[in-house]
Amino acid sequence: MKTMVMLLSVTALFLGHLQAQTQQRDVPYSPKPWLPTIWKSDPPAGCPFEQSTAIVGVAFTRKYMTYTDADTFYPSWAADDNMYCGWTDGEIGLEAVQSGGGAKARAGIVKIEGADPMNLTVTSLGTLGASALPYRGRYPCANLVHDGIWYYGTYGVDFDTSKPEYAEIYSWAICGPLPGFAISKDYGKTWTPCPHDLDHPLMPESGKNGKQVKMGTPHFVDFGKNLQYSPDGMAYLVGDGAMDNDPTPRVAGNSWIAADAVYLARVKPSVENMNDISQYQFFAGFDAHKAPIWSRDFSQIKPLLNWDDHMGCTTITWNPALKKYIMCITDGWPGMKDMSSYLLESDQITGPYKMITYMKNFGRQAYFLHLPSKFLGADGRRAWLSYSANFNSEYFCDRTRADPIGSRYAWNLQEIMLLDKGMKKNIEELPADQLDPLKRKSNIALRAKVTASSSNKKYRLFSELNAYYGEGAVDGIVPLEETAGAAQKDAAELPPWLIKDNQQPRVSRLNEWVSNGEKDTAMIRLSWNQPEKVTRIWLFDRPNLKDQITSGMLVFSDGTTIQVSALPNDARSCKEISFPAKTVTWVAFFVTGVSKTTEDVGLAEFAVFND
Ligand SMILES: [Ca+2]
Ligand SMILES: [Ca+2]
Ligand SMILES: [Ca+2]
Image (cartoon, rainbow, N blue to C red):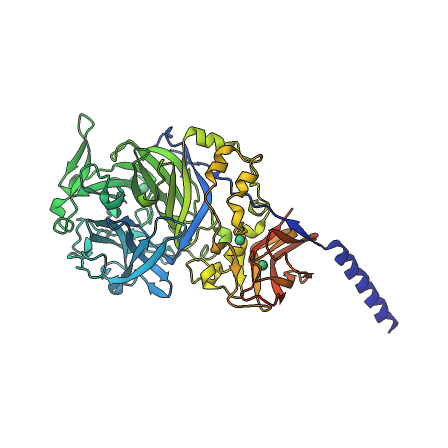
């Protein structure tokens, strides 16, 4: 008995000691905008493209949005001002479609309304079936809506089954041809199926029996609304594929995402022409006066560009303000791992092309890059990079592997700046880390996986994946009404160009985690793939005054807990909880008490610092 008393008092002493070192206080918070960051260009050895002096790099503003749980979005801007495209291998809401089903392959069609990339309406228009045989997959690619007619192209893909282990290393290792176009005259309500199949395709080539295609995964050059800026009224297709006499043949070296060369074709768009190979012209090199040769004979096709073992899925957008063609290429071999993407620019569609930036491990597994013409800024220096990312299970739903933050298996839109020398210098003179503590690298919640007990659909991304339900709590943004004006208040800290740059409000309903009608049952947990040092936590209540957390509890993966008192209701201050450094793999916050008026409890932000 005596021993037990001793033990109890020692325990009490120990707990008291810990309690003394854990501190809670309200800390006022004043939001500051994201500082743009330049993605360092890192081209591999042997890069054949000289650096552009007109566009010297790409910066990311950290404005981004993601839509759906699917990929393969190549929107075409139609005369009715909406964008239309295919989609596949995933879900839009609860509607699913897969393009890998052999004879049963299907792909989706979608309408995209709105001019603000942060607030678009994406509506499925159903799915189209077309046999992938003799390939296993048939996927959307070349997509154009012109004069109210929708041309919907697909391509075949297959796995390389010559060795069993290839399936784990190379995703869809073999690229097949473009069979042709399904055509709709009523914006996708009814369709005339493609008159050709993958055994008798429009583009006279094959990925079977060791043969390799050249016009692989072709995409229409984006000339603006209804082909507004096409130089000759023609629709141009850019494809990627094999080069003759490849000095370095590779398994999956000519796939949906990897290639050695880029090719061009063009056609006057019409219902009669689009599925008729005799109406096409193919880029066939340059004549003695360096003028491009266009041949009606497919066998005369020549690479527009080649970079052995470093090309892949390609798109081109005309940027009318800069008078530049911007080409996006993904160097995506072997197909299951990190992928690199680069942007090139040229005054002419036939080149010469110069390097803007080579973004190593962008995504880290990003593909299907494109700059939708509808979202080009008036000065041509702002654009939105459209892409999908992180399909492989190593990356899927793992926020810690997304780079830039926000990249996921979805239709991703990230705002970028196409930098001139002055813009680049301005950004290089900014502080190395973010000004806002929530946005700094030391807030490791920005790169945490997040699990929430529930999520109100009105306040979350267009996603049914619960890995993203709590994302509003770890996005570095507390949605206070005056956030946009904060830049002006902090003028002393920010250069004038950036204040001017940040006048648009950046906050939205998506910047909170909001539970689905929960009160003292709500929970949110952040986890990491490796042990992390943590020293401080900031908890922000929802900014509205009706919903408030009046008590809660932090639980750490090392078994320790901390009781948390009421959070400041208006989120203009946060509750800071500081403690002796712990090393943990996860931390959870349980709501244990709420105000009487609370309906949907939640957090505006859950920051976890390692400094
Ligand atoms: Ca090669
Ligand atoms: Ca937030
Ligand atoms: Ca509140």
